[in-house]
Amino acid sequence: MSLKSENDLSCTLCHEVFKEPVNLECNHSFCKDCLKEWWSEKQIRKCPLCKEISLFKDPTCNLELKTRCEAFLLERGQKASAGPEPLCSDHAEKIKLFCLNHQQPLCVVCRDSKAHIHHRFSPVNEAALDHRAKLLKSLNPLKEKQKLFKRVKEGFDQKAAYIELQTQHVSRKIGEEFNKFHQFLRDEEEARMSALKKEQNQKSYRMKDKSESLGKEIEALSETINAMETELRAGDVSFLQNYQAAVERIQRFPLIEDPQPVSEALIDEAKHLGNLNFHIWNKMKEMVSFSPLILDPNTAHPELILSEDLTSVMIGQRQKLPDNPERFDQHCYVLGSEGFDSGTHSWDVEVRNEQFWGVGVVKKSIERKGEIQTGYWEICLIDGKYKAVSPPLPDKVLLVKKLERVRVQLDWDRGRVIFIDLDTKKQIHIFKHTFTEELFPYIGIKNKLPLKITPMTISVAQEHAVPLSAGFWGF
Image 1: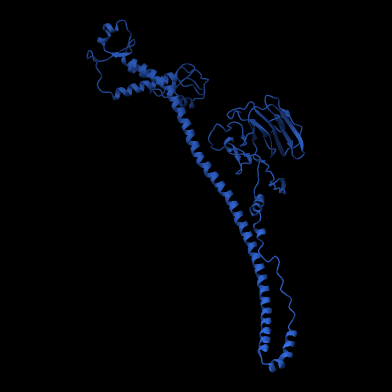
Image 2: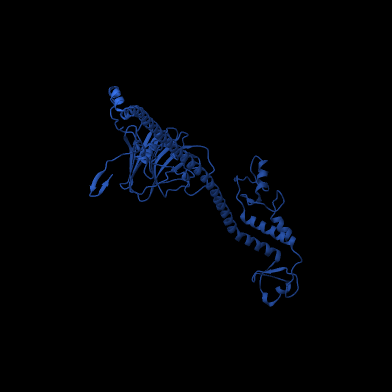
């Protein structure tokens, strides 16, 4: 029986127990690899036994046969490693039979006992083979579950590794941006300290020059005063003899105007410190930009390449990215990082007329995997034509010339999505719909030239203080 079972479970091509058995239309079975190798040497795919032509390029796996083969191999392995055959505990006889009614192994004496009258029996090896096959079959769901868990775990591990890469990338970008600001502040500090030093040198030199000039005048006055005081202490005769010369000396001394106070002599602290933070911030706006729309790389199709600042996107080589639930896997789409469920919002996109592009809004609940059936409002370039698309509405061909800059306006509360040609200032198309959930901006592209979000201009307005009420002022 064992030999017969092995023959029944053996491939006629390799003469070994089936490995991955597959079934042909004629119901003959072969190992998958054996059949593939056999067909590789033939021009027509035929059954190696009956020669019937097979229409299957990839025959299906015979799961039932595969299970029985695994059970047989387990039984053979168990016999090879087993010790002496076990004996019946009641009769000390070899256990050769299996009671199908009681589902227990027994000896021939047990078979003839009253406890097993009219029962059905099977040889132990056949019963073991059948039960092994049943157990293996019942294990299949667990094995499939195990495979699923392994795939999910691999996904988790991949995401964990990708998180590390994201962290390194974001850390580097944050460092670069702050280094720009640090350098700007260092340069600004150096410029302002230099201006302070320059003013200090100018005003210090001015004060020193005036001080030195006045010192010379004081010295001349001191010499004259000392000489006159000497004459005053002389005897009467000597004083009178030199009096006229002393008077003439005083009269010859140049008339000196009284020194005047110097205005704006001190450091202008108000100029250097007044609204210092504001002036630095106001100047800093020249080196920063603001984008009304930031693209979310976690939603981007693997073939899309986003810019470092996440404001432009183009098609490229497929990247190895985690297949997270938010990511599109069929359509080359990427969503904005922020959704809207109220209010009015707008953003401008520079488009390129190459192959396909589309801009618009989509529902938050839109299907990210597989074909997208509905839930979006867009204008796009497809097959060389501009169209307005929002299934199940019919596509509408737009009668516009070449588009280069498009504004998307979303009025969620009034249920409108408006598209405007920024070069002509004309409305391209308007969708009207009653929105019931959060909407996200989106871009679809199959162009090698990027689609870019146009940054907004930053301005600073200064308003004068106006009295509001007693004791309070507003700006």
